[in-house]
Image 1: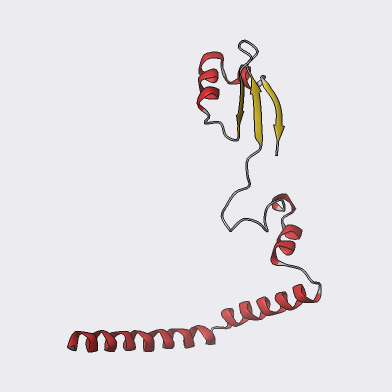
Image 2: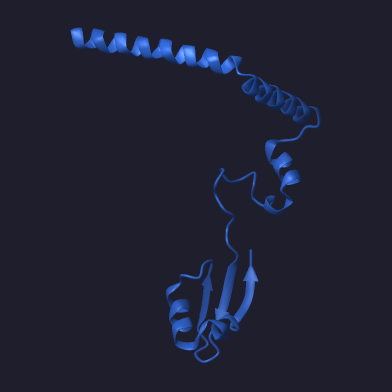
Amino acid sequence: MSSLLTTYAQQEQQMKELAEKLKKMEEDPRLQAEIEFKNQLEALMKEYDKSAADVLSLLRPDSAGDSGQKGQGQRRKRKLKIYKNPNTGEVVETRGGNQKTLKAWKEEHGDETVESWLVRTED
């Protein structure tokens, strides 16, 4: 029972320390400025009926494709590349360069030759 009481006392002390740290942060003018900016930005987005994804696509048009669908830190889906070996007629469809058959072709015929076998690219 005393270990439970000890744990409770430790947790209570940690809460007090965290509360003090939060209070110090709240007094920091840099945090206040960031909060004010965020509030004004959200109000502006609401006024113009825009989402965060809309704003990001305006600021970063090059990454507008999938910004609303994927989480932060995820990259866009790679394009599908379709290669056809003119010697065998074999077709390879891949979204990356690490495909087993494609690697074998590149080892045998060279990168440039295999890249010339690219039939088409799709999204």
